Amino acid sequence: MEKRPKTVKIRRKTWTVEWVTIPNEPVGKGKKRELVQVLGLCDDPKEKERLISINKNQSKKEMLSTYIHEFYHSINPRMSEQRIEELARDLGRFLWRIGVRP
Image 1 (cartoon, rainbow, N blue to C red):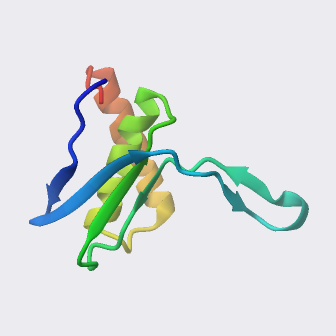
Image 2: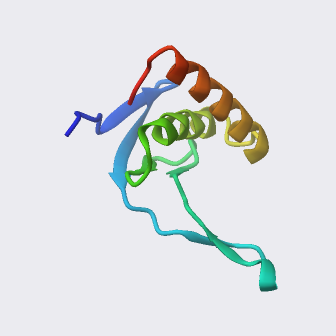
């Protein structure tokens, strides 16, 4: 098993990092309601105890984008989810293509 950090510093704040199984989350209403896989979660940076949770049940490629995604949440919690998704996907693809692996 690869070594993973238990804490990281982001903008001079310490975050606890955990790799866990995160349950799927119901999204939508009525007949359009479906379960969506949650890949990561990030506490508000204003919290005294800050936690980033990464779902360990994903591919290495997905995990790379999830790390980036949760990092963006930690530095700018007001950024829209759509923008974070776009940035994390694009940077994740770039890093993957140049050989970066989690």
